Length: 328
Image (cartoon, rainbow, N blue to C red; front, side, top):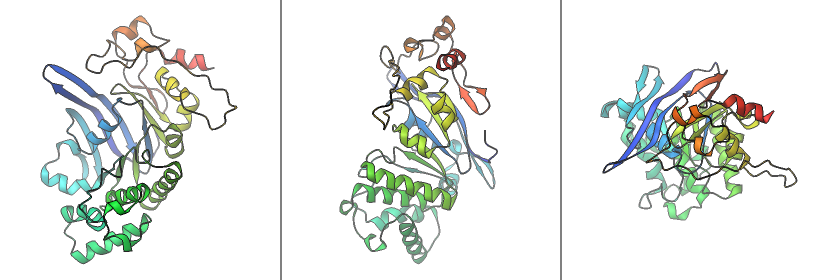
């Protein structure tokens, strides 16, 4: 763990969806710390719980149990238990950038109204002060202030995402959850938005939780990476350590599936057997064991704890030593 100050702690976060007698654990006991000014990438295949994790942290959806602790100047606040009044006060500290720049903006509101809405609800600023703040943040994210009275339909995907970024920044948050913030954009526009996020992070000292399927983007932007499988955290490590020597067998398979920019590079693909288990009826023991080459009897009976196997490296695997040895 870095010596930087911890700004956010997620502890045993669980989200259960119920339908009749059926229960689906979208998240199960997810725990990790986030340091001030760092970027944690969150990866995993579709349905692993990445977006549910992000939305639970910002209280976009209500978690079933667990804690999200925000470290403020006034002390540590459990965001999930905050009252309405406390939410109004601490909502400024944690914001979200959504995946779809088309669906996340109200087509009936002007750009100015979209960006200024958080200020109108969460501050006592005057109309003039709000106008000045919106014009300033628009300039910082690369939007022409002459366009602020236009509606979202007049903008491209990349420009719309800049509007979403401006809206999330207007309250001067400490933590921003980026939920697939560039996946809906063209590759050239992706690069522009990633560079913008990095510049804003340096300028404002922001902390990012960066949810993405794009492993190359995650490797570029992240300080550490959290890997999820079927609603659980299975590995957390510094980015280069995770990409060079993944310890969990699922992480190994996930990284081996990533395309390489050099077509002449030979990649040792790890082909997993079977399908992702049904989250409404997960396997006993380690949820990954039906597809794992290193499984033992213990894997079939007991779920491994998410513990620190090496300094700064957390893994939920009974046999990660064997996984590491196989790579050497």
